[in-house]
Amino acid sequence: MVILQVHERDINTDFLLILLRDLLPKRPDLKVILMSATLNAEQFSEYFNAAPMTNIPGFTYPVTEHYLEDIIDLVKYVTLSMTMLNATRMSIADVK
Image (cartoon, rainbow, N blue to C red):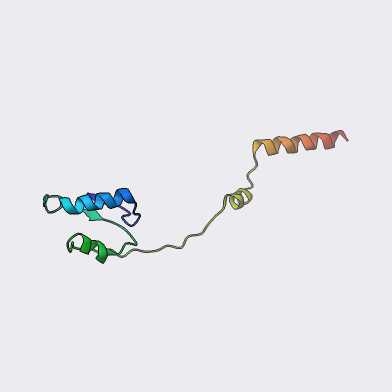
């Protein structure tokens, strides 16, 4: 059984972890993998009777935030209603 993001705990996941901890001695064929980028691995290992731990180093990548308003301006997006409004304004200007 693989449990991802085990650090995002709530009452349901805590209950599941309790059940798994109690079930493992009765089911030696059952393998449990707890995965998280931020959990305290030693604490979880102790909770599961000194379960083995594996550390896989990760990488962080720079993230650039883009906001919708900036992208709309960047691509010069125009909605149909804006196009129709501009066309109407141009028609009125032509009449004058």
